[in-house]
Length: 179
Image 1 (cartoon, one colour):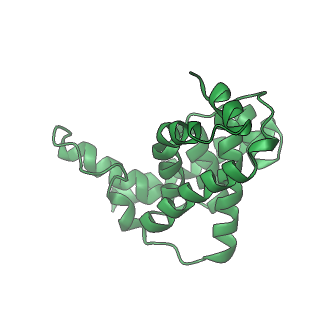
Image 2 (image 1 turned 90 degrees about the vertical axis):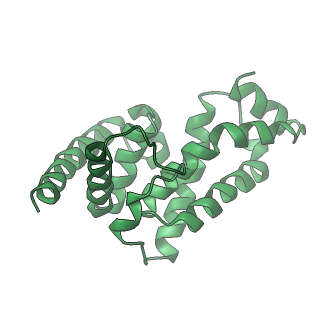
């Protein structure tokens, strides 16, 4: 059953279906929050739960048009904005070196792991809104049109923001790589 059908059933009172949606989206939402918070594991978990509390609270506002991912990441964006206003203490970039999904893959080479660590450090040094846009586009795989709706801006502005953020990310990554 697809997410839209599940969410329509949730909005009609079948709250058990929310558990299925939670299982499908908890990892991607956690990854999103983990990067937005620069590696704050506890807050990332809390924010995933907050998303589903709001999904439950605002279930009647879901109309069944568009994608569920767009709707749920729109909620996640607002939670991330609330976090950023309330908590300006981010974890250091070294905390991003640990993959949020658990144990490191033993088959990955040391070089690949080092590149992941450098990329996470570079991501942590981007401006907050640039990091969020890059995370939504390149890590969560959302379309620019959906990101524009989430960030309440135009698709063109999102394209420019991501393009500039990727240039800055490459520059930061190169600097980190050379040190």
